[in-house]
Length: 478
Image (cartoon, rainbow, N blue to C red):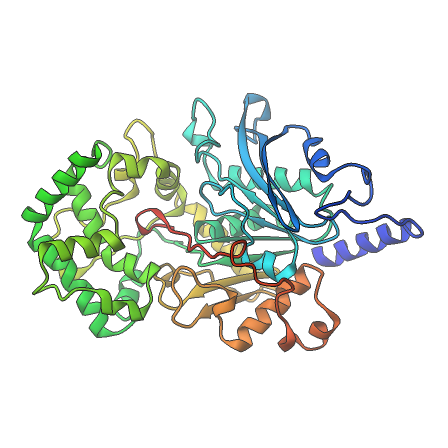
């Protein structure tokens, strides 16, 4: 229904603008419509609360790093504001716009996300609230929740839609895919489509058996056994490896106040090892895993460090991700896997988010938050695409579609990991997904409208601009 209403409104606008001509804004020219004589930078900076941090040149585009004043509490806007970073990759106001968030900090170098490559459009990237420097001072952590974050996106969209008035597509990977989904749930009339990559959906936080089942059958038995053996061997060699870890911490100035001890941090890194491998590696990479029984302490250390990262559970490694762990422990949920092969060796088990957030920040879990989003997606999803990787543990609890969903899809990339995308789908699903994205963005060529199997991206590849970076999450959480 909302798409039909938009089509009708667009028709009325077109009729009302009959006979009016204006040149569209390009990377080197002015915008069309109101303010056509203004440079695109001037139009963006004319938005109340918008300020420029820097502009970086890129051939064929304009790229801006900006601050935007946002209410700390959208329910009480008068209670103060904070500066939230956004970036704009400007192509042409006559093109659609892709609204991207990683769910974490924003990158400040131009990158074209896959939907942007497909539709040849503009791209707006948003830094998630409370990730520095987009953090209110002082930080009232109770104002960090999925509804407040969705309201941030809504305000940015509302402000920029006056300039970029064509179709908009929301996207993001991992926690960013979750973020795009939550935004659609709370503001379903904003976007014309959603492309959510590898988005976990932990509906019941106290029931995580799906992850254990997944890890018990992913890849091959040979690979799983190799990974499990390295984990066991690391815990059997706890004393010499922790001695190495102690020296490593001293050499780098690492401390362990938040998690509580070096021993807890060591075990947390080891327990993440198998999950981390499947999240970021491919089955062929199993050849690089050492044979645990004959491996030296150094080889065990090097493999775990390369895959899990011994620096992460330090205070210095955890601090940038405090906002994520706060959300995992208050709304998003987090996996609690058994890893029965470590029974009798593990002292702490898979540790909860509370262990990774400073104790002076209060946390209370809201078990209804994810259930609400899950029900909404099942019954109300419209023009949404979810893409998962076959071998990515986060796909063990995916979003699913019910009878109420319309023009929405869940696709899985064969052999894919946490970097799964449309390009990695089987040919039929790749063409289908590409065609739907083009249609939602309002730029599907006539040939694609007649035959979706002919769908392909509208841009030429650019090795620098299209560089894919897997959303590498802290300690393998989304």
